[in-house]
Image (tube, rainbow, N blue to C red; front, top):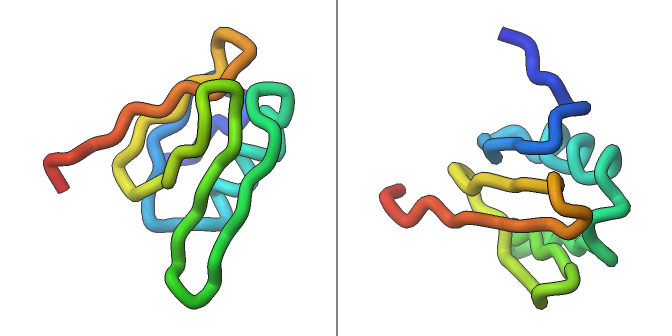
Length: 74
């Protein structure tokens, strides 16, 4: 199954490169992102604050700002 990176929604998986690719195509929905190589944590700075992005999270850029929904079941 191929991923559609142009879609306004995305579910984060364990492939960091795909998540970064999706984020770069939706740069108008956030201010900055940071990846800490040592802790392997991806954080995104956006209008609603700062979110740590984890595997299983649902990202939505539909409204011009990044909205994240965490999947706490994992």
